[in-house]
Length: 245
Length: 245
DNA sequence: TGGATTCTGTTGCACGATGTTACATAGAAC
DNA sequence: GTTCTATGTAACATCGTGCAACAGAATCCA
Image (cartoon, rainbow over all chains, first blue to last red; front, side):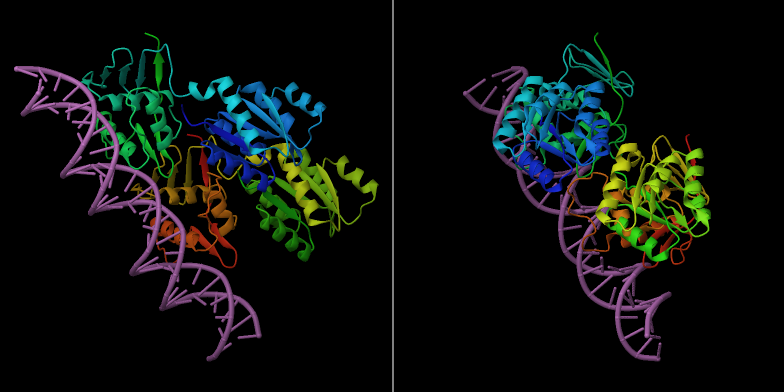
């Protein structure tokens, strides 16, 4: 499974920090946000699998933000509130939240709810691997998922190793979204190919990326397709057109 | 998140200074102005997210300025006044102010009101990094935001590091406006993460500025573009022409 | 089965980008 | 002038990444 990315929205810095830290220690990517603008940035700019949204955001209204997100996106939302009255809870559900937690909460409970919502929506599993698609086009290249063939812009067939193919698939499924090495490594294992231990120690992903670059980049020294996001990971930086054959 | 730019209009220098200083300490860019002419300069010349407008401006009338701004712009305005009588308050709203604060006020209250108005109008999202603009021209130079290319007046391509590029972007978005090191550092932290690596200890910004100067100034020893504001920070001191491609 | 071939992870080094530090210098305050 | 503070900058330190070389694992094939 890909690593879930959770947007933690709370205007209280201590609270925000506590929650992000805890979530990070428990195998998720926690993205802090303090207000609506920051929520926008994350939602619009990158992938977010779940939003933990405080009801009371200073002067802003968490419920309103929730309503808006719901209207335009279908990202799962868990409302968090210092008010545990049932009326509040109902209001949370009314605006479309997937779950509701009252502060102060047991961290384990939070984790349980998070896991529940993530698995319920199966969103975390849906982001990397697409189904029912057979071919991908990107900057002149063609990858046929069914046969596994890769054709260069000059229509020359390229052979990729199994691992390289898996990497390409992960990237093709997430164009323009920076993926960390850990996310890539985890996704590669999910494909069920090699079960070997993940990237605990080393630079396997780096080397794998380099090898793929050598095969699909015109000038591997100056990659245009598979770009490096320093301090983050790698991005598939071109548009991908998906066909159903 | 973008740093909000707040225009502080008050003819009393102490008051002006106190307010700008306080706002700057709280993560905003505060632009001082003492009269209508200076207000004009800022409003017309650069981005302003919020105006803090004193009702009593010597001979000029804050209410009148507010009315005019309202008529032609939709920048949010908070009226500030030594007179707390309700009639005054009503008058403030009548001319279109978004909020009203009576002097003397609690700084925290001011901050709260400012945040409230900023988030309400969602103006804080219109930030240092402009969108939908692809190229910037300044004193013969050309920076293409899309490709990241920088062309010198002699049409020679210059390569900037990632950090240098980010700095240039921040400066280009704020021509003629002195930015403190802290403001710059904050703006450079696009990730918004808990980055420990910000300018707590060091002179990173100074050195970064020096490196950018070495690349874009004709004579780095006597900078004409990226000037130092002693005791303040740095200014991008030339006009910037923005194109949409 | 055993050897050849291919695949893949590990390691060490190079290199560029960036932050830190120490010192020199410029400017302001007196 | 002297003194103090802010700034410029060279030199160094650190970190992330690319990559060649190596070694073990997997696969192929006679």
